[in-house]
Image (cartoon, rainbow, N blue to C red; front, top):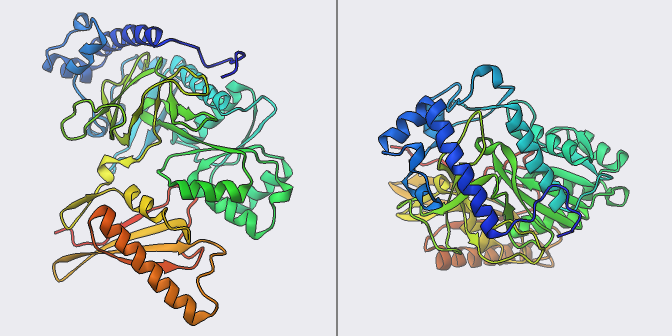
Length: 439
């Protein structure tokens, strides 16, 4: 990492641990004294502020879930007088109630600095032009990308999501150098750039994307289509300020997360005990200086692995793998637990296939059925004529189905489609359609 870094501190592991302990003590005391929810929860767990003397005491603290935030609607966890709240953001919840989080000005400033670090680690300069193609409003996405861009000092182009024609016009006319969007939208834009033969008119070099799990094949596809030098996966969620909680570096050896701003645990989602580095588990986060809505051991449901050791880029902040999916996205099919990412990994072994796929689950005569629809790679030649092509597609579908059976231990049908057949999205692509009878 450059010695001229403006936003990312160079901290040793011991220095990070000291900051975390000090922040943990502050958070527990602040929440205990000012949040009725946490006061009751901590008392029930038999924990008082003075009991926190080491980071090992983290395991004594109770967990917080998304249901806690929904049950406390509209302002859960509020821990400051309302006159100190300068903004709220929200995200949708599974029961229909939104999770609304409050922010003080200090919270906003902390978030801006965290996000500025992301732009810095991705190699941007103040001369970059950053096209922000994510949602504005209650969502943290657009506000976060713009806030961090302005704090960093680059030029923000706040286009928002959708509006494909305007996106392409701005990419070309404004000389956008960095694109900020979901992976699905990057793919959609890349395909349109190819259709309209626009790549030679673009100055794009980088993309920062997040908000959904993606496959390496999908990433390679939009990087090639947009002519990118690098793309960077970013992490974050409304509960921990918003996007900008961590980002990949140019070494692409995991996501560096800002351990001086929050504690990240990776736990077994069933036992809630720590997993070993390299093992898949659920991210649980505890904020260190979050004022309006502090978080104590919040179960994010996001799945990842901790990466031990120092990154070759020189950034001292610890790392985790990209988000592999969510623990509550798990499919139970004929008694087997499956994550969509497992299916994407199997599809990625076949060079003839594109990154886009969809899994449909149905039930017939009391037995679950699985259909995996997947697109061919653009330009893939499977036969010299229609008959030969149909035969080759059938053989490919059977080979994919056999590999799914071998790797995931479930049997399903596979249908190979033409490129561009499956629906595209400006936001998160829906990979699984579960049409089974819920009874």
